[in-house]
Image (cartoon, rainbow, N blue to C red; front, side, top):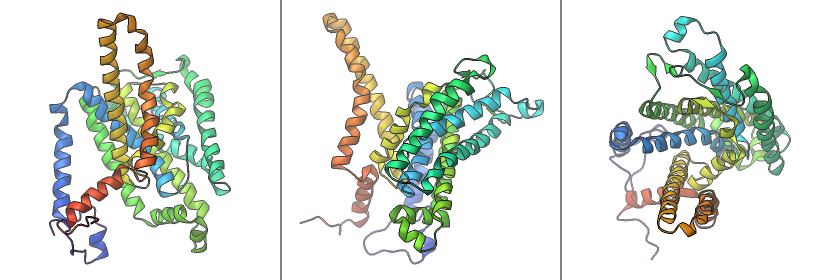
Amino acid sequence: MSYLPCGTYFESYQDDQKWWRTPFIKGKMVFMVIALAVLPFVVGTQWLSVAYTINYYILAALGVQLLIGYCGQITLGHAAFVAVGGYTSAMMVLFVPWPQWMVDWGLAYPISIICAGFAAALWSVLFGLPSARVKGFYLIMTTMAAQWITVPLVITQYVSQIGGRGQSFSLPPGVIKIGPWTIDSDEKIYYFSIILVLICLVAMGNHLRSKAGRAWIAIRDNDIAAETMGVNIVGYKLLAFFVAGFFAGIAGAFYISALFFVSPEHYEWFYSLLWVGIILIGGVGSIQGLVFGSVFVVMVFKLLELGVLGLSDILMTSYPELGWMTTKLIFFKESAFGLAIIFFLIYEPNGLSYRYWQLKNYFNLWPFSYTGK
């Protein structure tokens, strides 16, 4: 089967659950990998930073998609767990007295990434404990408490003061190193982000096919029925928080390689809302939707930024008396995000992934697709 036209079906469950189920899908994936590999050669540095920002949002929102989209646990404090991962990785690189051979072989940063994932996962489980007793609005308040306790209090007032460095940790050049590969340019940051995104997406997809993944979906659909069927509700909810926190820690550890410093301002509450908005726009309960939502949000922000800057230059050059409007235009970018969420909730509540699924099915079923006439 090159593709799945009307009347063609899989003959086994194993074939239906394959990652690349048809030669056509394999061709699409090969094309995508080649396109991602050659992207740095066809775009400028400005757009490379946009590309790895998209990948960062995918990594950060992956745990949000797991909790909300697959386990039904609403979270509004995910930036706190990303912050734990970022600070854990930075502090391990800066303060741990690594043996010289580990530094020379570039093992310090990779080890810090794994430790950042586990630190964020354990911190996530701590604030996920109330999910055993509460849900809905009360769980929202619990995750918001994680945000306010972690970033403004623990990190800003205590962790950031270690070493007398103020609120931010600067990473000297050359410390972000994986084996012989020193990550010191936008191209290397981009390729590193691509590798991390592919690993995490595959891990997430395989996890959802496991016993735990089926238990999470059962809890999301009807937790009472799932418990009646023998699903350990508390255990699997905490496992969901652990895995989501681990992905958040990986995201935080990656982002320090792009910024070369870490500061509490990168983990404000707005980012927790932003990552929830990404899965609402892309599609709740869809890995593809996570990617679509991240691309949509980052590209809209970038295009609005270019438009606002261009319009501001025109106003300041041609109409100086209207220069006061430039300060008003700056706030339009953040407002556009809220307008986009409202638009999708009204006109496309299932997100971009559902529209993609409809388009894909239309071509797969053509010329026998339903026209509605």
